Image (cartoon, rainbow, N blue to C red; front, side, top):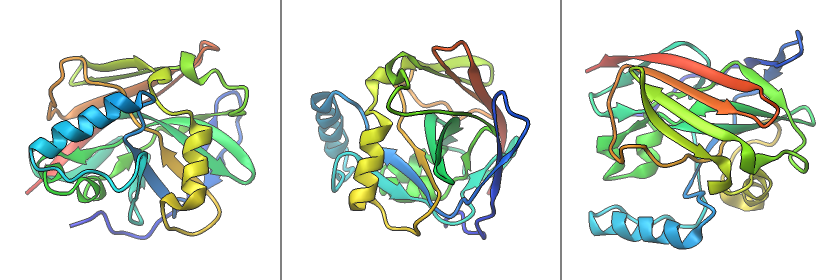
Length: 227
């Protein structure tokens, strides 16, 4: 099963501006294996292969999401007991402008053992409604800090210098990393390691991105589990 409902425009609010930006959510892509240390990425791929997870076709890997995946709600529905979120920086290109937001690549961890793409497609992709307009060429990407909590407990923390710069991710996407309509793009840019190196299947999730300017983009959501 995948998240399959009509894509609807998403209203986002740039910090410092009272005017909402309407983004076409038809093209949502989750980038995987985006670590900047490619040797470490390959070691991770090799470790997954040892437990039966097929290696990606390319690195980074781009996973197009089905319509209706992107949500800004504070409550989302998931199936199964073993799903968990991951804080990710989200790059949004819309109307000739680029925005940086915070989201969660919520994933079915049981299905992930069989098909990584499918494990992402069966879950919604929460996105915080607040964004920051950025110039990727001058953005101090490396100094941005990504954090997450599950049920109030710290879950992730790391600098974006661990991840591939979004200009390279967008170039790869444009070069044919994922099919989809032209126009607006919502790209989840990868994540940082878990603090305890183990998944947690909690109910309340909070994700945050601390910018060098002192601004903080945050989002929180809870999951409603269905059988």
